[in-house]
Amino acid sequence: MRRTDSRAVLTETLTMTTPFSPPLYMQRYQFVIDYVQTYRPRKVIDFGCAECRLLKKLKFHRNGIQLLVGVDINSVVLLKRMHTLAPLVSDYLQPSDGPLTIELYQGSVTEREPCTRGFDLVTCVELIEHLELEEVESFSEVVFGYMAPGAVIVSTPNAEFNPLLPGLRGFRDCDHKFEWTRDEFQTWAHRVCREYGYSVQFTGVGEALGHWRDVGFCTQIGVFQRNFDGINWSMSNAERLEPSVYKLLYKVVYPSLCDNNIYQKTLVNEVLYEAQHLKQEWISRLNMDSNNNAHFYGPPFMEALQHGDACELQPVYQQAGSICVPLMRVWFSPRVRALCGSVQRLREELREDERVRMSADGMVVNLPADDEEEVEEEKEEEEDMKTESSVSKSVEEDWDRELGGYGGV
Image (cartoon, rainbow, N blue to C red; front, top):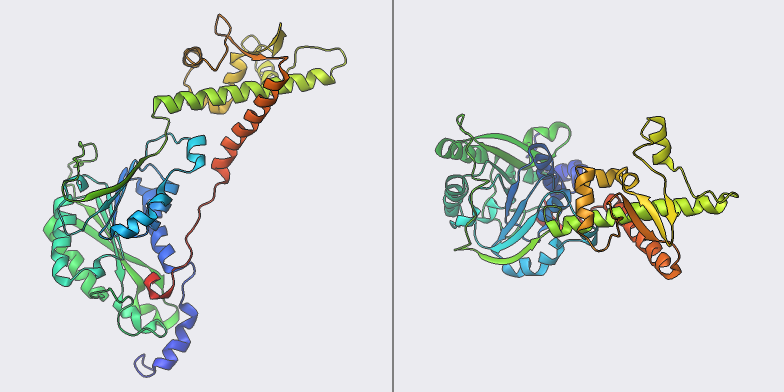
């Protein structure tokens, strides 16, 4: 039976293939995320970002992105959704190693904006079909000619798949100005490559099953890579210009260890947490020791004994009203070692912070022993610091709910 013989049979047959699982819009986002994970672009701009769903996922996964920009012509939607891009509590508790700045602009992809040049990756997910056909030429010239990014990802509906979508009449969205077949999309893409020096690979998401597979993907995707001709062409390190055409609506700089103040605070918090942990271990051991032995050989120290480093790792001990935690014991914390490249640097950083009480020679961290109220406060701080480490591991991505109607297809 030919596919044109019976729409009812088509609908019945293909209902099993749609809606897609995961939803098609999530598959499109995942495609971009996978690309970012593989190629790790530092500067990414998403045109037609609308409700910022893709931006939200990219900032969650990060993968080396330092600048994340969203552009949409609809400022109302951007202003409504921009708060979803704000840093979470976990971002402050556990700052990332690298910087991240997020910006949202009101503007059109057909306009030349100087601050959009020099990006590593441009994404246009389900955008081009919302332009008038006469605007596609301007889109091509601006994105591929003027902006000239290292890579461009363009996704758009595959018109050949439309008859397989149950109940669909006309275009998939009332705002679509056109929907291309695979030949039409590829003809446009190859022309762009010839004119602006790119190569392209075609793929997609949302595949039909069985003997309908020959219609291609529901969403067709073109991945464009700039031809550098052996020259390491990149504007990623070029100085950014202020926007002269677009309107900046939102900007946020995420906390990171690149900020000296944040680095110092994070390092001190980790040191105090580790010192407090060692102190509590020592007190617990002391309470169980019928001989009141003030020296507790904890796991790090026992490990040092096994490797012949006992001379470098002294036990925790009490002196007057202080519990003395040797700095080398603190240094054994993997997190502290990751933050600070050497013991000497650690000592220098701690001496400059008034929250840490150090011995005169800088070899010991002193913690109060008898102030019960302060001990209780430190216990609470210890729990908060434990949360600092656990939050970043347990935070799960809040994936958006499936979009209703064919706007999500």
